[in-house]
Image (cartoon, rainbow, N blue to C red):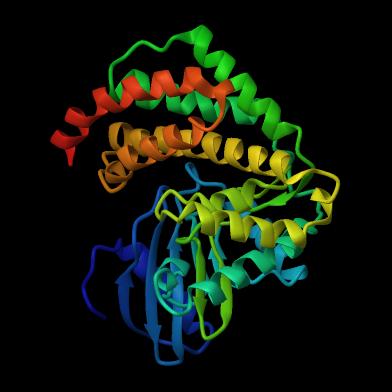
Length: 330
């Protein structure tokens, strides 16, 4: 087997788990690092390929991953089947859903087809019900916004947060998000957690799914942290989503668009905080490059709403402070 930076105990477990299925390891390739503590490898065997996930049990919700994987399989959501796992070590062998991400279709002739597939799945995902899917509470939404103020404003920029003003911003955002109809939400439904090839959609990184706001996943998809759509395209695809979402029938499009934008703002603020934390706490520089573009997009979106002017003011100052710091780091 090709030598790569994989612990010998992990390789041994993988080989043993595959041998029990009559397969042998031929090669192993590390996959892209994302915003978690997990590591992924594509394992080539004499019978095809599988994915090895090394997920530290103390840092990741492995039991929830296995539990929700079973729930989504029962509801025909295209998540990877768990072929073998060791909860003690946090090791999983997973069905290989492919290596073509949704983002690979963007800007190609497959973009419309891929986005249609991704959005068409959302009503089916929304309909999933199970006691394992916990509620997405207002308290959790506030906690996520605290990640932005603590790790980005306070620790990365070294600035003092205007607590009163920021609390008012948080209350406005959370109230709008929590007022939406609720359903099962993936909570990280973006172009790098969706695979699409040969007309087949695959969904990964689903362990944090919650019963939450109906517009959360479409906001994650269309106001992606890693890709920018034209506003006209966002309006088109939001309309397509709305037309097949009965929970939104009673609301005017102006209300839906407002909810959508404010949900995206909350999510992107959280992402900036997480990307900052990845660097400061976990020594991962991979996501620093996304922070400044995200801030500028958040500010542009917030600028459409007079009620969010205090956020505009805070972000404008943060952007100017962040430019030299991020330039040095990246």
